[in-house]
Amino acid sequence: MTNETLIESTMIFVKESLKHAEGGHDWFHTLRVYKNANLIAKAECVDPLVVGLAALLHDIADSKFHDGDETIGPRIASEFLLKQNIDSEIIEHVTQIIENMSFKNSFDLNPSFSSKEMEVVQDADRLDAIGAIGIARCFNYGGFKNRALYNPDIPPNLKMTKAEYKAAKAPTINHFYEKLLLLKDQMNTKTGKRIAEKRHTFMEDYLNQFYAEWNGEK
Image 1 (tube, rainbow, N blue to C red):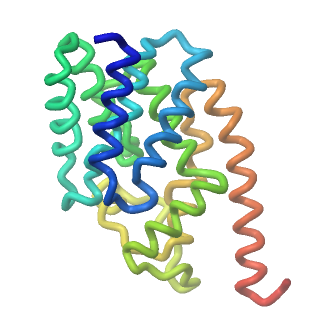
Image 2 (image 1 turned 45 degrees about the horizontal axis):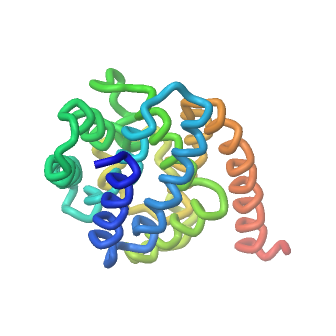
């Protein structure tokens, strides 16, 4: 099987698997991450097949939609790749990326795994969490969870633990401060950092407008 055929087969598998997914974590999110990853990878010394497969399979079973179980996604990805008869080292690398790339793992001071390929896919995923699409995804997920848009009486938790982050049910605006506005400074690659700067500024402008409208100022 050629790399092109493998990527094509993976796309078909992921698109079918995510056909009923929440709008912020659906096939189109995956496709955007895949495109972002390919763009970033052009300037990095990485294995493009590992990057492509990890980007496509990174949200095959997000733990948020599986009662917090972080083992389901990597397991499904591994089972799929095993059926494709590809090198075991590639399968292990892709699985490790999926297990370790999530924002919630940034709370771990001593990460158990890292690679240049993971840095690329991680940046690609984080780029889709900020900017115009990031804002849309944030409110889409908040609506999915029936969360308030904003409550000035509930301040963001800027010192939360990993457990608190996973259990958070705060208003959607709080998520900007607890995650989205932090991502710019957590980018790994030059390309990721460059794109993140513009998307970060867009979010700051949005929040300024949001508060002005909330307070009846304009």
